[in-house]
Amino acid sequence: ICSKSNVLYNWECDEKEVCPDATYDGQSSKNLFTRSLGHNYKYEKNHKDSFLHLHQEKSHDNADENFKLSVTRFYGKDRLSCEIAEAVILRSRKGDVCNLKSEWHAPPPLVKVTRQVQRGL
Image (cartoon, rainbow, N blue to C red; front, side):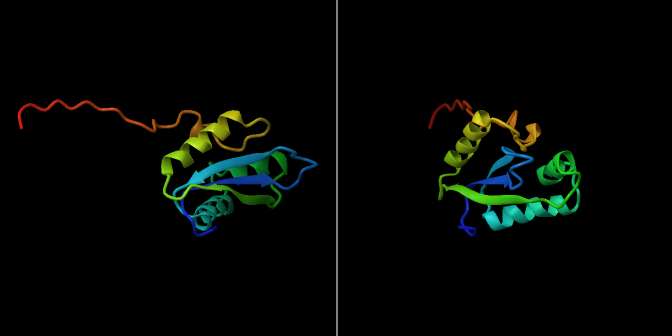
């Protein structure tokens, strides 16, 4: 499944005694292997918008990350359903949501309606 595109995925802190409900939910049009490399690269570079880095800094005194990555669902060619599913999960998630609000709190519109008037043939 790591080579399939349009996946919904979940990172979960594996240190349940300290962080019983710390989670990050995401979706990607890329395959999960490529997307996870992006997350890991940001973590290794201590990037300011790396949820892994921010969580480790806040909850684990900068110890090495201990997250478990899993695929929640595969959507095949249905990109829109994948994006909608992520939005629904993020809106309903309780506890320590590791997603940055800038990533999901005000997403760009999924549908853009335009009007075009044309006269004649």
